[in-house]
Image (cartoon, rainbow, N blue to C red; front, top):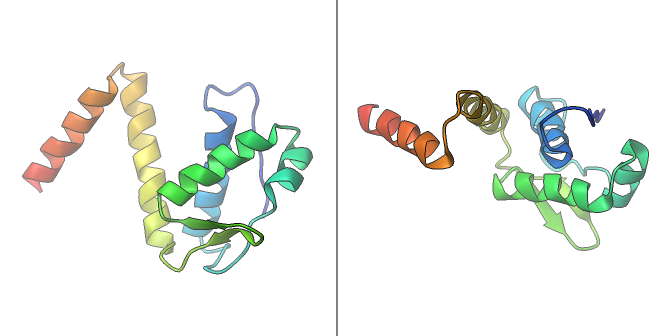
Length: 119
């Protein structure tokens, strides 16, 4: 799996790392059960702080795409179907576009609620 980060991007580095993993799950190149690189090793290879990698991994854990296990590291979950990862990517695009338009978090949530009520 190839990780790339752009320090000049407005997207936080941890989010860029999470997006790399999410994309690999979405396109099927990282299957359930696969272990992700150790946070320290990945941080060293990318030239970022280990906490930056851990923030990205934590986001993926909150999304249900990976499990963090002491001693085993980060492992892609069985629930991390490509469809779920694509949904996460779509949510990231929605949030990015909404922020570009100047919407607050509360306004973004309101837009999603209206969509849910209409669907």
